[in-house]
Length: 151
Image (cartoon, rainbow, N blue to C red; front, side):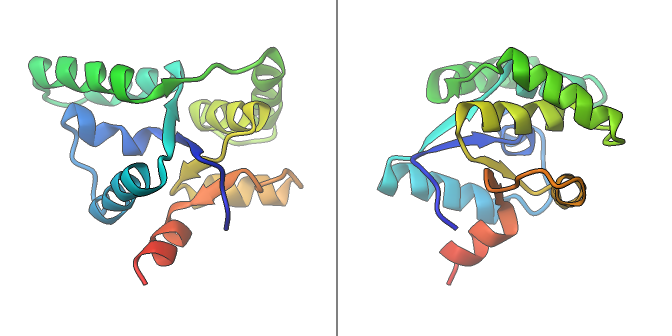
């Protein structure tokens, strides 16, 4: 597994920044921090990540100040990336093939269009894409990254 010095993050890796506990996230968060410090990896997000985060927060009890600080940190520390029109269309086509999570599809297609690897722990997404003959060369599967750096 090789990747550039840029990674588009799935929303799950941004949730702890706004105060949402995510089970089993500690190892990967440590690795992401190490990669940033030692290898200069730049992390990217989209407006869809923020939409998904807000959607999850709306279903829980939340600390408004923590959200403000967290979202401010994301904006300052990470790079905002945008999908192309082709990204939107490809995501819609894939959704029509049966994948329910449009946000994940938009992150995947934005990653493809911008040639930036996409970090996810969503094996369901990866299997769906494989079954439909879509490339997964742009996907970094969390468990593989953890194995690589926790040897």
